Length: 186
Image 1: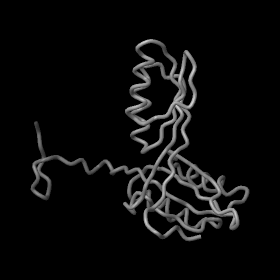
Image 2: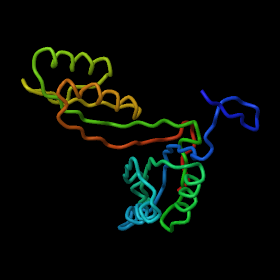
Image 3: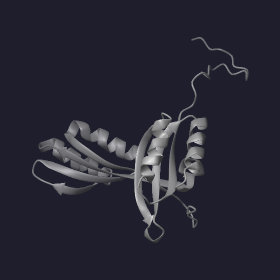
């Protein structure tokens, strides 16, 4: 094994040519009006950034304000650039990086349809119970499970359902909020 010495004296090779890619969840408070979502998405597509997850809903009806939760990936510099560009959009009131705050909770909901009989059906039910997934529809040939939790938990459940007869998946995307008594600025 060839190891190159780094200036720090470490014998482990660190490839500094590849930038570190991070995944961040961003909460964005915007005016709830036509075209706002298109402008936010346009910011991403126009600069070649990818959106891994997107959820949107009006959160304060009387103020006509919506909350957009975006999960995206990039180098720390790219993430900072995305946040700065979002803050400059006219309908945006505030942007919070839920990943950096470290004091946030993120969850996702998925509906997972599994078809099967016999032992596969029994195993699907057993795993659903272990993952605290609820049966929201059942027939003699299939189940639809509802599962909520962190994205990696949802991913793991879906992966385990593949050999048991996974038919279809519908996911909400990530929703997140910071802990504590304070909310985002409007």
